[in-house]
Amino acid sequence: ITPIVLDEIRIMNGYNKDRATFSRNARITKLDIFDTSSEYTGDEKPIKTVSLTDRMGWHTISLPKRAYQGIKIVVRSINRGTDPDIAISELQMRRSNRNVGPTKPDYYFYSPGHEC
Image (tube, rainbow, N blue to C red; front, side, top):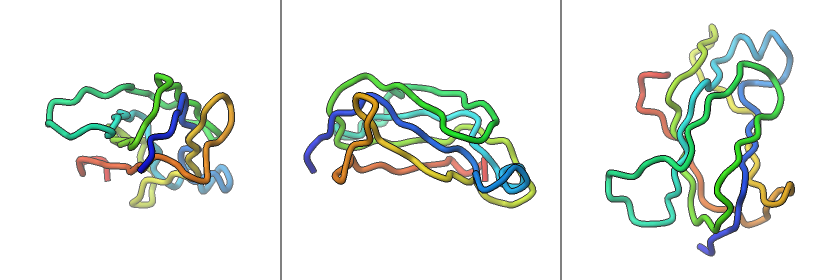
């Protein structure tokens, strides 16, 4: 995988269909972002820890501008809804205020389990 230069991630937190649906589904309130471009050693520190406000719409997260081969997003806390899930409507990888693509770094969300 060829590393891709990024300087931000945009996330549409929650299920952004309408206010009632948004409130019914759990939303992320805090997350850690890790650069997974190098070999995992177990003592990595996040490149960014972010608290998200509980609102519909886009949340922009700035990153150190560099080439990323992979990104891991770890959910640290949520605002629970009545539905047993965590919703994310959309995620964008960006550079210089534009979406990157069609090739993107590998990325995945992870939760230690106590949030779900």
